[in-house]
Every structure is written in C-alpha cells, then in structure tokens.
Image 1 (tube, rainbow, N blue to C red):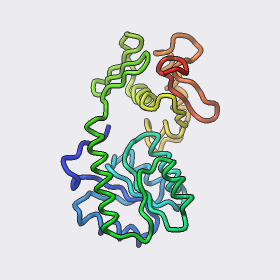
Image 2: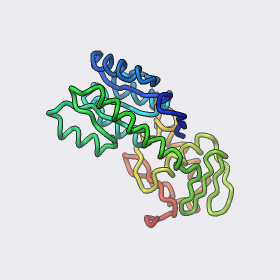
Image 3: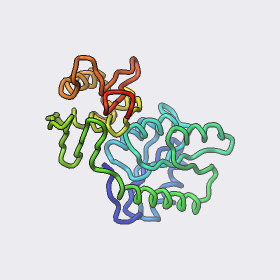
Image 4: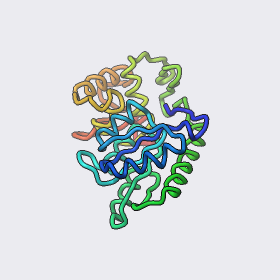
Length: 239
C-alpha cells in the first residue's frame, strides 16, 4: 500500500541513473528541498529499491545498462502506481514517448533546469497525495470481495482462507483485472526482485486456484502461455 505523506518534504525519492554527474546534481537539487533520497545505478537496482524502500516518487534515466528506463517503467507499473519522472535527452523523442506509454507520468529533458525539476517533482507528489486519499482499501469486483487491511477474502459470498503469499498474489492480480501480468512481475511483486524461481509462482497459483475456482478448468485466473496470468473477477471476459 502507498505510504501517506504528511507533507511533500517527507517524501522518499528514488533516483535511478548510471551517470554519477547526473546523480550528484539530482541529489543536490532534491536534498535541499528536504526529501529523503536513495540512488540506484540501473533498473535492476531500481526495482529492488521499489520493493524494499517503497519510494513516493521515482526519477529515472531512459538509457541505462541491464534494465533501461522503459523496462523499469513497465516493471514498476505491474506492481505500483508510484509517480515516475523520466529523464531524456533532446534527440530521444521516440524513446520519451515510449517511456510515457510504458507508464511514466512526466519527463524532464536534459540538460534541465533545477527549478523546473523541483517544480515537476512537487507537482507529481501533489497528484500522488491527492490520489492516495482516494485509494480503495477494499476490492469489490465480480465474485470477489477483498478487504486488504483485514486480509479477508470473500469469494461468491464465502470467506476463503489464504496464506499470506496467496493473499498477496490475489491482491496483485485483482488490482489489475483483465491485464496480463508477467511471471517476472508477479514474482517481483510477491517474492521480491531476488526471486528467480518460477516454481514458487506456479505452485502458489495452483494452490490459489484450488481455493477459488469452481472447476478444474480455471475461469478466474487464466494462464497466458509463456507470458503470465490474467485475472477475470467474474470468471469470463465480461467485467
């Protein structure tokens, strides 16, 4: 769940960039505003920080080794609605558009004005704070009622006991109805970025299906071969 901010100055900002000169500039520009900062050198480290630190805002470069900013946006969006600002050089218009399509909320063009960056950070934190107050703690969709704070799941009017991992897995799926969530995104969301054992996911999906499905033919959690899973809260494509 998103952390509630009492004011913008208490916000945690994750900076993901492989250029030390840029990270120094960003650290100086944002630390003077009272934000708490963490630096990651690439998208893989960035995702680890998203899971472990739960930042309130992510500022990421587009071009990075191991996992670039576009891939990072997609990975983050599979598990979180945290605001993302991408950094882009002027001749990367197509990449900038791709990043926005992948889930980025805004972009700042290099070389950038410190004042502009600070203003865009404030704007994204304001929007996030406003959205937080409206974030539902209850998911009620189709045959499912999920009370996240109480860790309660009701399926077709019946209370259903789930293990903590099964509960986290169902919540992650239910927060993205109709969308295909990749194996990697689900593993990262539930087990963390160091999880590289797909059998964890396969076993827990199988156990979860036994508790919520009506027949041996899955209707709620549908397998997308070689990709991941799709959640259908009504058991069909109409929801």
